[in-house]
Length: 354
Image 1: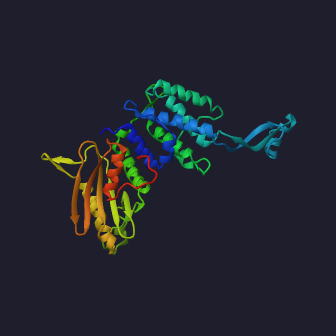
Image 2: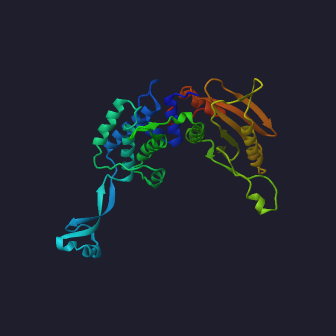
Image 3: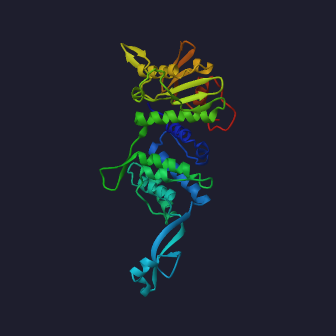
């Protein structure tokens, strides 16, 4: 399944909920643009915007040996070290600096990109120019936990978009066999990663592009009867990918990303049985006696490149739909298709698809 690079970028920006930032970070994309080059271009343009508005700074605590006094003197340590005779002190002080975690992750990501052999040379030169404009920021070893430590506010919220780009580069970059160099792994070839991205995209698309339904992930309890507490704890948890709900209606969407939408059995195409079982289980077990749960609609949603499916079934009062969306199409068609799947038209408000 080959999805155009521009569409991958849209998927990511919806999944991140960063559509406005995407419009600000204008990136030229054509048929020859590789995924790695795309991320490099995005990071270059975003960093240029950051430099124009002023990079973030904060007070950083230091402890150092100084000639004189700055901040708070560590009296006992200064005396023990006999520094007082050299007219020096050990002091705790704060320094207003750009060498903070957000900037360190950005600079470290730029250094990593420069060391990837496959990256276009002209992009490496632009990245090197940016490094020269960020001289006081030290690179660090990036880990997943570092991203969780960052707390942003209204004044530095633009970093959220930049850090999303940095994280996806980090998650898909690995040391190469050549010492000091890195390789970028194309995550679009990984079904697990693409399934996660596809699900997040669908969820946020409906969150942003319509206002009729509330969007959530729904925890559904099994409607089994047992008097044994021990037995209950062995039941697996059921959680929907996407639930759209208002006072009168409920729609459960199960988003699945596969290279092949259907399975072929004796030359006949069939829906993947495990997906149908899962959706059916959601519908049956979410019933609580209210009208909207008795009439809830279930939708299995797959991506497709070549052939679209529009299959309709019914169980009692539940509508069950099998739908596909062509991710190789233009964004107007994709938007229209997604709204049509839940029987809505495109709404007239901010949308990058217009």
